Image (tube, rainbow, N blue to C red; front, side, top):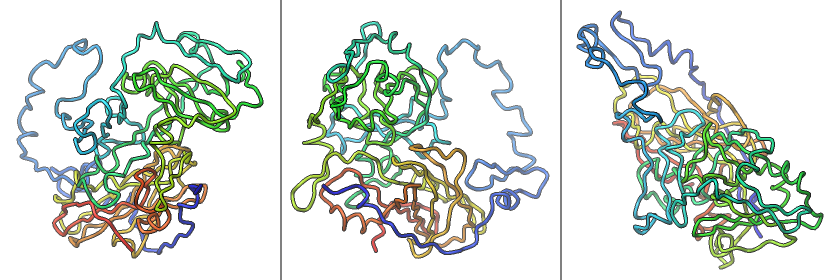
Amino acid sequence: MTKVSEIQEKELSTTSEPKLSRRNFFKKTAIYSAGAVAAASSVAPIKAKADDENITHHVEWGTKLGDKVDKYPYGVPSPYEHNNVRRVNDLLSSGDRYATVSMSPLHQQEGIITPNGLFFTRNHGGTAHIDPNKFRLMIHGLVEKPIVLTLEQLKRYPSESRIHFIECPANGSTGWRGPQFNNLQFVKGMMSSAEWTGVKLSVLLEDLGIKPEAQWMLAEGSDNSEMGRTIPIEKVLDDAMLVWGQNGEPLRPEQGYPVRLLVPGWEGNLNVKWLKRLEFSDKPWHAKEETSKYTMLQPNGKAINFFWPMEVNSIITSPCPELPWTDLKKGDMVEISGIAWSGRGKIKTVDISLDGGNNWVQAELKGLVLPKSWTRFSFITRWDGKKKVLLSRAIDDSGHIQPSIDKLVDTVGVEGIYHRNPIVGWEVTSKGVVNNVHVRS
């Protein structure tokens, strides 16, 4: 069995190219006329004139009453955000909308929390709608006190909240053999991040007792696919959770309401939704989703299974094909930003290349840096109007480095579609148009 660690690079070379500071960025992008403003959240400065009709005239929304406070008992997005939605594609589902994936719009997201309505969805038999009053969770097998819990009983256990990403192991497979979708959403949209609330399995099992010979746990869902996955006891007792809350509210139906399993940092398929049963045994089950599916086919015809952690990864989210630099003028300062993540721990550093990997500079990590969570990175540069090939390369605190395409191909071949974490390339043309490209070396 090939170990995941063998897939990773253990070398790193960087150059000492000077960086432009964020403070200088805001100084340089300030507009020097009294009637102009710089939008800090924009890719490029937005110039406004003092006689702009949106300043000199009453705007429509300022001349009438707005909506009543109680118009929407559950808040809704602005109608101007109608393009900020999940998307599916027939190429990924053969027209089947029950067993497919709905991609998250990463280019529209800020920070490290995905709104519940934009969290990517992967179903194997449609979205189940469960009556919480009829929910039952059976825990049995090699435990001292087998039990059946209602939702109310499960919530009596001490809870906690943690921020973690969930990623389908097929994320990135759409462009593995070559660029197929020229947009970020379909290149890397099989992942999202949230704050999860629930009980750690170690706390629950401390109460129920687990027999010494128990080495594996089967998690099984109650939807019509009855998704089942095997998880080693070490992970169960480490940080696995039973969660009922997502971003401060109950799980959405498409995210496993009322209870799902959370296995931080490990492949999304293990995070079984609509949970109904946990069984403990001294042997793995070799379920369908870990034998015929979710394995890595090798050139010799054999497949790797039981390789759970999601590898260190990163993606530049701005610019990208959906967010080009077509509005920039030569000399404008601009921010290159993106997301890095690792199923093994924290992101340590992220490197950026502007020239297809010939030279690398270190990006700045922004905001919270948490284990098994998204981490935002940023690099400030100046647009010179010349073609560029942008790359990002993440390194985690376990020493794993995001590999090049050729390095990954040399290690695991091209047959499998799972756990593909190579460096992703964006070509920026001289006109600022952004295209997905493969960089081979």
